[in-house]
Length: 374
Ligand code: C2E
Ligand code: CA
Ligand code: CA
Ligand code: CA
Image (cartoon, rainbow, N blue to C red):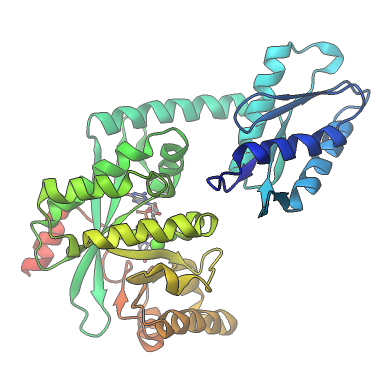
């Protein structure tokens, strides 16, 4: 069961979901709560997968409707994994293990999904476990590095800042994309130590470049931690960096789920003196209504939007998105600029800062220093 917890509705919510499931399950089925927000349903059927798929669909349909918990309305979803034991050939524990594995696959695919177990999932899981182990070792032994990508003033084309991007050269495998390992760090409890490493390293390095602002990505798993502000304060103090030169970039996902808490966290971070930017704007939910209240210092337009600059309809969307940010008096960065055409358009629309391969790929800190000395 997935929902936005943290409203004091946790237990009530679980009970409400359980009550709904009880109504849905067939005669003779067993319903068990097997973890905090995990349920298992076991039942006998004489069809192959049909009965299980049908039940899963009914459950997802039931959960689509918002639940009333006390005086709150809560939106809930579920990820469902299904495993079968034809003629009882699969043992009970193995059956639970398989459905659990399928459930994680469903979760990865997005919210409100159901997935049938298949044996290839075991191989996937093993690879993932190996990756996770290597990542853990890399974090502990300081084998991650940071690359820095120039942020360019749209009017003067001067470099005004850099974005720190984490890099991992996995022994025996080569470079692994952060798009792959950040989500793994998120789900395996490694994101905090990874994030702390990145923040500390970026702040230390920033001291070499007094003229630059340094942006650091913060993932939802870090932001969710109530102690996050404390460790930002700690790193700022430890590295003796001027807080106003650090920008933390956060994405929309978590913000939408927890607007209240996000607002508080942003306020506390800004009280430390750091800047807070909204990353990947226009790529997902874009809850325009909130934007002003959050007090972002900057908005970054997602590369996927910038890419559409040549298409008439996408161009209009893009222009409207930038205009919206600007109407809130928030400065706007365009990311993923690869062509002169894109740069010109984004400047025209009102972006004051540009970022992309056209101006510079992410590079080692030494190269940034060289560029500054040119
Ligand atoms: P992001 O924050 O949106 O970072 C921008 C990504 O776009 C980077 O990919 C950058 O290399 C790429 N990029 C920049 N300009 C261009 C361009 O002109 N064309 C193209 N095709 N790509 C461009 P990268 O380094 O692979 O990072 C991917 C994502 O991983 C980041 O997206 C960010 O969400 C995440 N990430 C990277 N480093 C960190 C980190 O230290 N902490 C956290 N939490 N997330 C990170
Ligand atoms: Ca970013
Ligand atoms: Ca981005
Ligand atoms: Ca992105």
